[in-house]
Each structure stands twice: as structure tokens, then as C-alpha cells.
Amino acid sequence: MQIFERQIDKISLQKLLFLFTKNQTKPEYDFIPYKYGCYSFSAQADLTTMVHKGLLTDLKKAYRCNETLNYFDTLKADDQKLLLYIKEEYGKISIGELMKCIYLNFPYWAINSLTAKDILLPQQFQKVNNSRPKSKETILFTIGYEGISLEEYLNRLIRNDVKVLVDVHSNPLSMKFGFSKSQLQRYCNYLGIEYVHYPEVGIQSAQRQELNTQSYYFNFFLVTLGMRTSTQVYVPCSSNIIIL
Image (cartoon, rainbow, N blue to C red; front, top):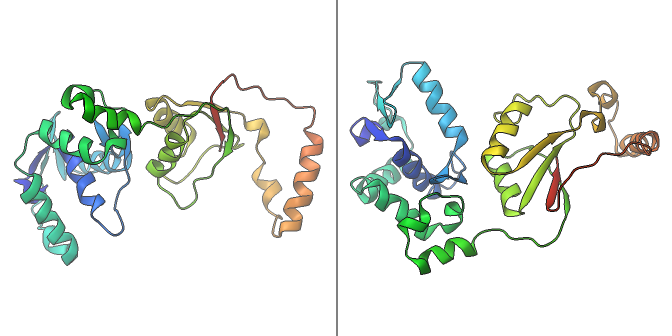
């Protein structure tokens, strides 16, 4: 933000950050396809925190940088070079041109865009349609979130055309951003994915304390499944389902 004259439009900021991370060896942020293309919930959470700390000012449609310390000089040389390239290549184009450029080069991230059809030509928009995950089968998947970001997790749901996420944690709280029940439900709903919680299917933490070997896990699940054979959980859905 400092090298962009200390102020950037909110939509442009997400797009520029996306292009920056796409050229990083290890991206700082991951993104999901959202209302105006690529969007990072994690980056937005960091921006909100920076506003609360007084480092940024929220101007409704833009952010203004208040910090005087030159952060550019603290970046790695490769990131400095990349940031200057992003500014030179994309810093002077309009929001519409920036969005079109990303939609053309990264059509998957435009599948939920409200503006893609208006910005792109019909044959260009067809590439976006071709990037939409489609499944004619009803499949039950399982998933965890160890070692991945919220956005990568959500992308795995989207790419497999998952319509319902069933959370079976007995206590759906997490220190990791985005994975506590209220947050995850909200982010899933933003993407048209239904979130349902069945805590009775989960395993109490006290019961997991002694599960130190594979044989302990095997015996535990044998007993647990035997106890729960009479328990039925019905999820009303005709599309793909995933269990967390």
C-alpha cells in the first residue's frame, strides 16, 4: 500500500495481492472465487485488524495507509522485485481492466463473479463456465483442515462441487482462523455451501487422550461404531456431501 501512493481501492487491493501471491514461490495468502473474483478472507481479516490498530484507515471503498515506517525495505529482495513489477504492470489500469485481466488468465476465480458476464466477451465467458466444477453423482467425501488455509479448504469443497458440509466435531471450536463453527458456517454460506453440525457423531476430547497407536484407534472405532449402529443422521441433499 505504501508504494501505491499509500491508498488503494478495496477491490483492486485484493486483485493486486492475488497477482502478487500468484508469482510467489510460497504464497502469503490463498484465495477463493467470490463475488468480484479472487478474494482472500484471511487477508481481509488482517486488513480489519490493521484498521483496529490504527495502521490503516477504512475509507469505505478504499484503505489508506497511516504507518510511516518503510516496510518495503524490510521485504525479501525477491518480494521487492515482484512488488515493483506488479505496480509497474498493473498499478495504473482501472478496476474493470484489472478484473478482466484476471478473469481471462485465471477463469476459475471468476466462476462466482457477479460482473464476469458483463466484463468478458461471450467466448471469453465460456472459459469461465468451463471452469465451473460439475458433478452428476452424489458422493460422500471426508476432509480435515490440518496444514491448509481456510481458502484452500474452501477451494477443495468448491472444486469437488460440494453442496453440504457436515461438521461432526463434538466441540467445533478452533484456534485456526475460519474453522470455528460460526465462522466456517458464514464462509460456507457465502459460497452457497450449506453447513450443518451433528455433534452427537463427534468424539469427546477425553476419549481421544489415550489413542496413541493405530490399534487403539481401530479398537476405539469398533466399539464406537457398535454403540452407534442405531443412530441415524439424515442430511437432505441430492448433491455432494463432505464430512469435516
